[in-house]
Length: 126
Image (cartoon, rainbow, N blue to C red; front, top):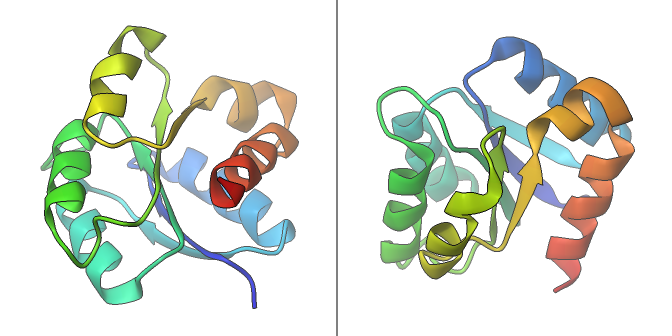
């Protein structure tokens, strides 16, 4: 059975692009468009990995990350932050429990989905 991934991205264009790439790579994808929806979906769907955008409506990605790590039902799920921001936030987010980072512009816009899939597989194997 394919790993289930929760994709949290407020941009419909990027969300649909990533959903297609992940489904083509054999993953089962569940999506959320904002932070509150992400927390609900994480509890209900129990994904193997969460791809979490940093800039989200209703709750920011870092706030969602902290809430996920505080909740015993979701604390063990690895979270990979999707960011178009610089890596200066990386250390703080790692301290809060992020398992990895992926620069959105790389995969979704230029280099193709392969780099995103490779980053996901690395986190899932660790």
